[in-house]
Image (tube, rainbow, N blue to C red; front, side, top):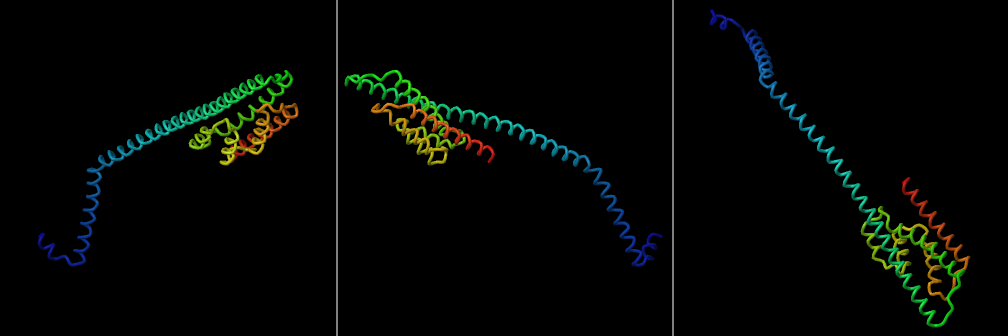
Length: 227
């Protein structure tokens, strides 16, 4: 009977029956594959999810570490800049003190009269204003925003020739109102040999230089913050 069934079907019936069997086989394969691989797919998805979580945790930890290192580096950079500025000031203070003592000894040996109290007061006031100007120049040369190698170059400049520092910082574009700083330095140098004594007008002139330099640095700082 079975042999008779297969013998009696025509080509169209055979084609239809073949397609139907193929469809059933495909459906069965999908169902079978679902039951066989369902657990493995879930395991793979779980592994991927765990890996992503671990990676995100590592990245968050890395960001915190990098931020902490950057902050420490910035603090160290600021400390180095502050020390460099202080070293420059000490170097100049020592040189000024030695120069003053040497000139006083010469004046005494030559029998020259010591300057009176009013002249000393004017000279002290002039020096105090100059110290503020010098501090502004040193601070401009030691700003943490300046490249470390450039700041090191400034530190190597002998403060006994302070004009060289002004020129170097100005050449790199790091000193606003550098021309005024040069004038202040020239005014200060004109009285270092004590051949002439400063007057109140000279003190007022130095104060004007200080105001100009201070305002220029303040303005440049604000422009950099809004840039």
